[in-house]
Length: 238
Image (cartoon, helix red, strand yellow):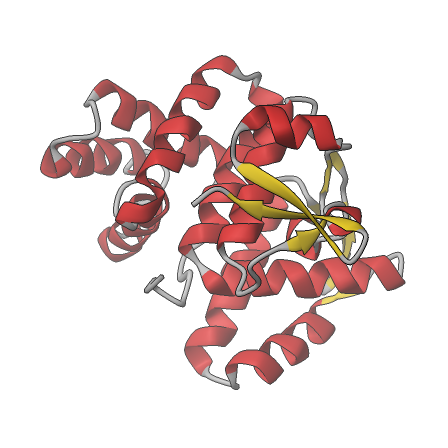
């Protein structure tokens, strides 16, 4: 999928909620009207016209300007969003961001791996590992800071002191949302399938606890199961 690399502005969960609500109100059709409504809403929080435009485009990249191949997935996301509790909606947004911004995915993997080894993660460690993957560029440095701010606003990172963070875990109780998160990881991966025993080890989902069982994957309709080398493997439905 060809997507924008740099997530140049931070976003808040309530802004993502509002974007979804606007799309649902407009039946996801008139882009100009959707833009104007997002502009009107964001103007209450962002005074700079440039920053407002950049933030609006990020919200649209996540939920509106998407690849055709995930349109059905987004339709499913809309339906689940309407039915699920507020506490689980972050997982729906997270899935869509993983599909929209590769830098967000890689950053989360890095944070997840660091948090798996130590109680606190340092911004300097995160930056160094991102630069190893993407190259050291000024725009990327700015993007890392905005991604970190987004994760703080999502309440999945707590700043203990300047440049030092602790992960805050969130339990995903809605199995549909947990399946959506897993689907987004599979869809954004180069691998054709993954071992079922590894589904709770994806660092892209570092703040989430989902407790998915094999029956949950069978029932949600997003995955197929097979046996390879004596173990159960999972792939997404094409």
